[in-house]
Length: 357
Image (tube, rainbow, N blue to C red; front, side):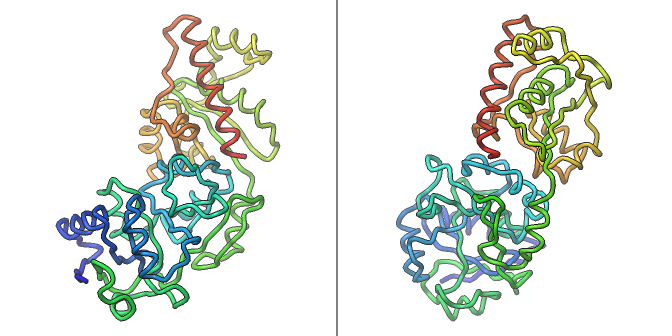
């Protein structure tokens, strides 16, 4: 086992690259996290995964935890993302919270999925695993750096004594920041419930997850795409506990929906003549739990207005279908352009309705 020391606040690029290379090629790396020390492996490498389970003496029915670089990758791995989960993400990611979702089986390595079809994910706040995640192109499966059944490890010396030469690399950055394991919350039930209480109390989790939820659709002028999404989703998801609204990054306050938008929605039996546009601002961004935007430029604009809001804004097609595609503005097009956009939005909203359920 090779040991390297890294100062988390003054990291050496060559050492981080070494860790990334080892994990990618099937090695097992012990590293610090914000909670306790963990073991990281390439979850797409079956041999490396099998070796990790042998070393830890871990039950193969217990899946590894997937570390994410940011929440934008979440829709690719979670079949459903209930708003209770998004509220917890807004509050605690990056940080000491592992959230268990229903897995999107076609996109996930088997070692990350439980027999019940669930997957646990976390975005750590420690600089070292975050830097490794920034540089890797593989799925990073993780587990605590101890023999199963033993106490969690909070410093590098304990790893040397427990695992010795069984792993390939140990990154020593001093004591773990918090010294307690992450809290694990299952959001596949309603209400969600704690599977393991760690740094965050179950009482805190319950309090945040039970607050009234809110969803905002965003486009440019708030006279077509986001207005369509707002009124359509209100009909699809008539939950009185969910506040649904729309806004535009460059909207003129108080504008009516475009005439073609009003006409197409009238054919759907929906009266949009009373709609008035709203301009997006930092105060609006702050109060909503989930923000779905039509184009990548809208996401960038929101992050410019409120950098901390990045964790709750998604491209609409990414959240619905894990596709990194825009829904284009039909403003200068004919009725067929509007019809195509309307169909795209309706198709994606049906997937979102199921995703939030």
